[in-house]
Length: 631
Image (cartoon, rainbow, N blue to C red; front, side, top):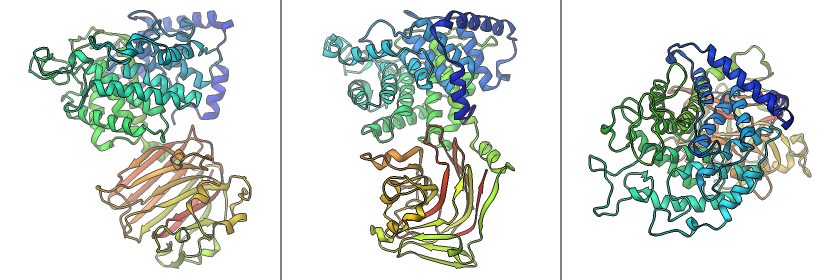
């Protein structure tokens, strides 16, 4: 996690409280600071700036050159400040937070005027973000009001006019960026999934109306949906009209929705599948220079790429890589090429050009054309590029090699295992040899008594690093191995903190006994088979599962699916690092190495406990050179 640790972040928020009493002072200071920054700006080559510097320059220029279509709360500013809040979330830089807070104060925390129009809710995303940070003075009452009216107050668009384009509430594809992310964030803030359900209802109306199954793209509105007659609107090459920014609104909006949507939400698979469909199509039609043209299927009509659509695509694609939904090897070259193109559209004063003006269909842009939503798309893209650039390898290496680690546990695994380990399960077998510790669960599939877990006798506090050699010895095509990290009882009933005190309750080591009654982190690996045509994965979870919730709610995103590792008979070196904010799992084998990581900054901390090795029934492996460090 870049920037401040969770503790210092809280101190920062407390320090930066804004109240009505200091609004005038805050605004005055803010404007003076911006004036100094702009006046001191040098006309260097923008390509020499770091990505973060380029984002700050873009923000500074845009704040000094405000623009909007209808008013300061309208959709253009809503899209811009969505980029600003994501930039702050990625960098934790005060300059982005200051811009957000000052905007909210100027706007009196209000949306724009039309309750029925999806565009006029967009600005509320930034208000909800600031509220999630605990910024004092954020007033969500106007947001509450427009959301309730938008969803439930009667309007002719909800009834539909079959003689016009406005046949549904969200009748144009842009709406899928403007309001669904607001409703998803609002549902999370209110802990009320009913807002997701009604969002899904309206979303499906738009999808069914405008999504083209053949081209795997969205028409901007019904005007561009072919009817098979002389009224069909066509490009100069005879193809359908698919507007870049329109599909950018949809794809960028999908990433924003998925970013806040619960992993176990009933309809999440629809959004994930649509996201993967759109991103795959965008990869197919990306021009060689990286930037998509304003017309997706008639790119030859334009001699230069356009920033707003390309920025939203770059954001969405990079988000997918960073969150484990897109294959890095397949999509990262496209993201890098697009970001290079976007950086080339920024001028020396920070302005981002090549932005198509407000419209509803493909039109030219130029080096000098700009809009605030174009800057927002640039900032959105940059926010995920920074995460992409925050190399997992670099972060892992820095943590792994620090001299702060103290070895607390070492077992070559060639001597009597009972000296350092205990065993849950009466069927399992553990044998030591020169090869290591051969740990085998029972052979009977779907018999809980045949599960097995080995536990260290020692408990470990604070940050931990775990290293060991792992060789799979089974050839099963189901079930998993699990590493338990710092497990303790959840202190409910007999499940006291020290898990050794209720070992007899785990003689039959059913999975539910663990995920319902332990505080622990879990990493499952060597899951299912080792070929690309069958499901297997590497996943992290946080126990315990809340009562009356599904097991899926324990999952920590991302889930790394379809990872073809841990072949039978091959030795892998495993290194796991857990800190307060990060969890890493590194595997090294003959075919190379890979690092998987999870952000723990929003996960309830796990700070002490034993280390466990679970084999589900039928699974077996050899372990050697187990080392555990703390700091």
